[in-house]
Structures are given as C-alpha cells and as structure tokens.
Length: 114
Image (cartoon, rainbow, N blue to C red):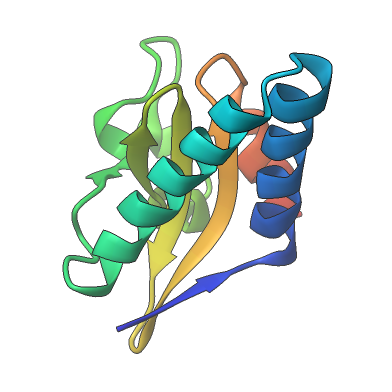
C-alpha cells in the first residue's frame, strides 16, 4: 500500500526539523527524530492498521459520539514524543498531521476537516 503525506504533514516535518535543529540548536537530534518518524510511517505500507483508532485514546472529557464521523476515521501512530495521524484508504495510507504529544490534536484535526 502506498503512503502519501498531505501538505500539512510535510509542513509538520519541516517544523519539527526547524524547531529541534535550529531553535534547540541540535541538528543531529532533528535528523534522528525525523528518521524515526519516517521509519515508523514506512511500516504502514505493510501494516496500515498498526496505529490505534482515534476513539481508543480520546481524552475523558470528549465523547466519540460528539465528533464528526470523518474524525473517527483517523488512526494514531506514536513515534517518540510525536503522533502521526493518518487515514487508511482503499489503495493508500494518508498521513495528515504529525504533532507533538503536547498539542491539542482534536482541534488540529477538526480544523483540517473544515
């Protein structure tokens, strides 16, 4: 199965590289984190359902029934301190966002769906 990165996911990778490499002044750590993320995402080619469905890790104050159905299509693959949010299609895996674990992923994904 193919793995396709959306423009937002590509921008997320650039932001991660920039933040760790430039702002934290650790370019080697930035390379290592990006390599780990890309290696994990590559595993989705063979195992597209590797990540957990979004409904299995929602914060306790959010009810899955209150979310748009399209948001429930997402799965999450954890890569160190980052989460890869993706959807499985008929012939491809679509990587939509790559967010730090401290980010409010629900709002980020809902914004993308608008």
